[in-house]
Amino acid sequence: MSALHAIRDINHRLFSGYAELLRIPKTPRFAIGAVIASMPFPMIGMTITISVQNHYGSYGLAGALTAVQAIALAILSPQFGKLIDKFGQKQVSIPIIIVWTLAAIAMVTAINLQAPPWLLYCIVPFLAFVPPWGAMSRARWTYLLKGKPAKINQALSLSSVFDECMWVVGNPLASILAVISGILAFSFTGICVLIGAAMFLSVTSYTPPSQTELAKASGLTRAQYRAKEAQYRAKEAQRSAQLQSDTSSAKRAARSASLWGTGMIAICATWFSVGAFQSATGISIIAFAKEQNMAQYTGFVFACFSFSSLMGALIYGAKNWMIPLWKRFYFCLAVVNIGIGSFVFAKHLWVIMIIYLLIGVCQAPTWINGNQIMLHLVPPSRFTEGVAWMGAMNAIGSSFGSAIAGQFIDRYGSHGGFVAVTTLALISLLVAFVGFKQIKTSTETPVLNEVQV
Image (tube, rainbow, N blue to C red; front, side, top):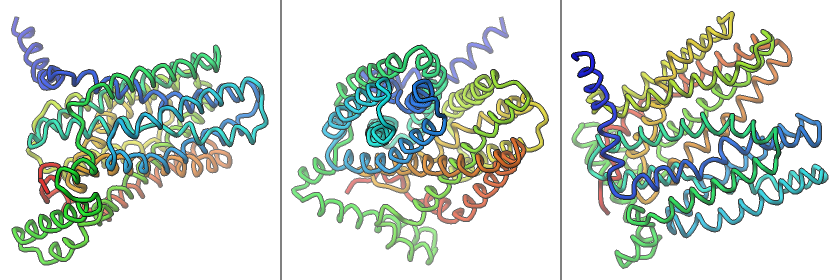
């Protein structure tokens, strides 16, 4: 019985906080809806790759198209986030969804008719018209739980759990459906977008007010409101600097009025480097598995990392952390970087899987910490844009890392790819510590989502 009580106690500690969040009326609808609507992220790249290869017989064309789509997504996501912060989630999301739906229909039709490749290149950038559902969902949680940092930590952890579930399900599902039929894969993804969007956008009670709405309520123009908001941020930074008796912080206070302050630049540079070495890891593992005639197990290896990350998010969000945010951020980042950097010494695929299982518990917490740092870096009216910039820099870094690892693999095999991974992982850690002062200082300023203009 004591063992049963212990299990129940652990279960209560782990899940009671998440259950409490999901018992808030309508929160399950928008939280789960955001994940369902985000299915293009794990599915579209895989669907394009398999469908184009089946109809055109070219992995080169498939890879080029997915790269164009990824780059377009990295460019457009921050702009969509900026528009959403300015005009509102529903007002901006609906036109974007319409464009994506038309692009998906055009793409699947062109592929099945084996249209000229130049036409595919013209269509594929429009498949990047995907609202930043994850950023919008996190913006709703932070608005709903304003002034409750422990609950915000749990909500961000819950969002990461949902994100991991999306990737665990999305990638293998896309490969199965695309092998059967590209039309089926695109249709399923489109249905997910429409259902998820309907679930998310039908909940309006927790939508953070847009800059336009805030400015109107204050009797100001949007430009005037943002100017007053920037002035308030500068005053808060100056007050924090005075409390710390830090003259250098006072000098930095004037620069904090801009979205692109030193802390924001440091975190985006870190996310770029994280994307670079993690994408290089993926392609290197695939090459390593093929050399060992174990390519059929690569999906299992990646699933282990995602599962471990999911468990890490659950456990991390269940605890009310007293350790400073910047310490948690650097610890989790170091575990992931050093762990993945050790793949260069692995002699068997199962060794990589075990390392993935061990270090994966720090993957989701790294992202959760990054989102929490963003709360200190940007005001509430620009939170969606800030999170979208993080994702964009990560995506651009991913394209960069894949290209570098691919060159090393072509010349030196999978070992060359892992050498590139180790180098990029160490550079990523170096970049993060170069911005140490800026990130640490940022986490010691007030949470900007808790202040009012």
